[in-house]
Image 1: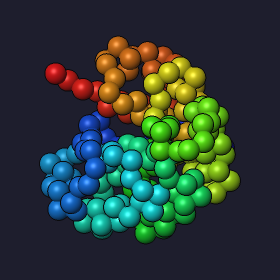
Image 2 (image 1 turned 45 degrees about the vertical axis):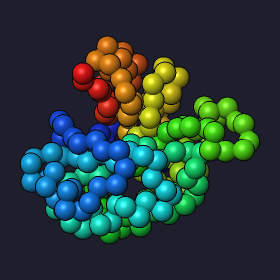
Image 3 (image 1 turned 90 degrees about the vertical axis):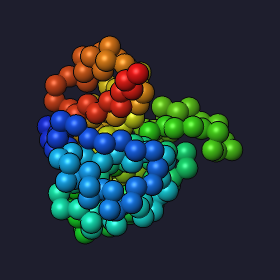
Image 4 (image 1 turned 180 degrees about the vertical axis):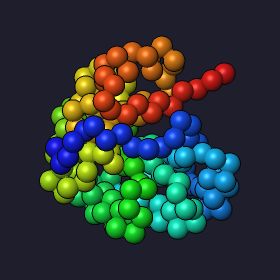
Length: 182
């Protein structure tokens, strides 16, 4: 691990989650409405090129990926992109990674092992744990999130799952569930 896990990202109480592309002007409006964070889903490419225009158009909005798919985005390329964004916009980008859909790869690998290897690569590239969250639903990956990142970003969960995830994670790490309300 590259640093203490006691630092939770300051994303505010509520954020906006979108699937895919967001125009910089939309991000500026989201910030004006008082939201602290914008989560961009849709498995962005390893270059994370969408991030800079959004961060340039906003003043303090935190931008997070929800999530970069470990099967489609090379870990070294993601680490390079993270450092490029961090150099231009310090402390405003949160890298969310996750197993995603393995059908994007020709070779079968155990998802948990692949995720651990991906985290090892990010650690070696000095991506700070305080700027990294992991998509986690099951207890094993929730525990990994608590050990190797700033926290967890479970997707399409229920309030009951969120309570369970908090119990598994403990209080020292971040929990950012994407909860659907009908």
